[in-house]
Image 1: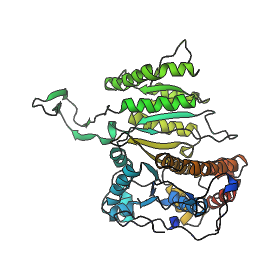
Image 2: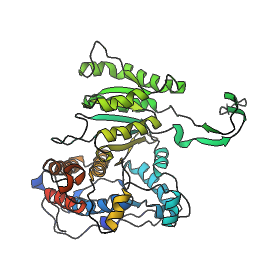
Image 3: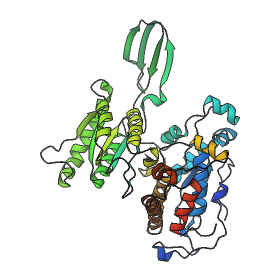
Image 4: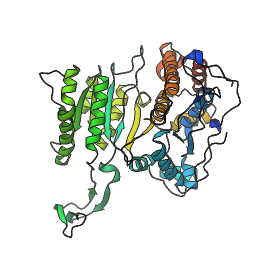
Length: 442
């Protein structure tokens, strides 16, 4: 069956083409198969990246997905830096358009090229972060980064920890310049008005200064609050809001909006569910520096935090370190279309693992833990089924994949980050999971 290409002509993943292999009867495994003998996957976008993570996901698609799942409704895009360069970034624009249409996206880790990588890869320029473009293109609200847990395996936090990172605003799109002595004035001209408003004016007396301007959109904070509090309520974890509003006064509206939504819609529900005590039901604010300490000492878990974009970036890196590594943290972007339908993009919270890929290319053994990427893949498959239908067929299969990975880790047959030197190689682990779920022909 022919797969849809990006309008740029970016090549499809070779591993994603349907293979003619003997198909196993799946009914006995608890998930249904369509007339083709495979589970019909709902439409979604699959974004391929590069280096070690792409190599591993190629194996996973071949051995775990293709034998069981008809992915003909998926749209595949190649977001390697070289393909972005060859297509003048049209491939990224195609990804954003497809994601807005299908609402469910899985993305492998990709490279945002440095100056050295521009030279090494023969690129015309250092292309910008695809993640930033996706957040803008899908009206990003929040990036949910949560701990992944395996029953019987001690990772870091004993119970789930949720994190809601505002997906827009702050330093990431800042304008700046390096200036000398003089007067700095920041003005804002309201739309439809003729008179500018002076935001700040100051005398600069040092010889060398970095002057930075950025803004923080607030229109979607109410929606972020509802997403965050609902997730915490459903999981039975205590919510906290993190800012540095005592010093950064501009952060006060973020806290005020979060508190307003909590008080009006969620406070009594948290009390009724026994998550917060009736004697002290109010939403608790944490200063960002206090939150860094709480993440280290609250290892029992059972809490959630919501923060601005930059604070969320830094704090979730700390969260990952406490919980073993970024491989045990999810990273899910939640946006919204013009009709209010949620767009969700799922990925691992780690990068392309360049050093391990270089070792692989030298012929050395590798042992990459794919759990974070697989959590992203099954999350995208489940969301696609929720949006487009087919959840009763897709979700039992995705649950079986997750259960197989967890089983191997509990049995000491996982990758070496958890199981030590005796752990399985990348390829051995992929094969072991394939055997657990019934991997079909090789």
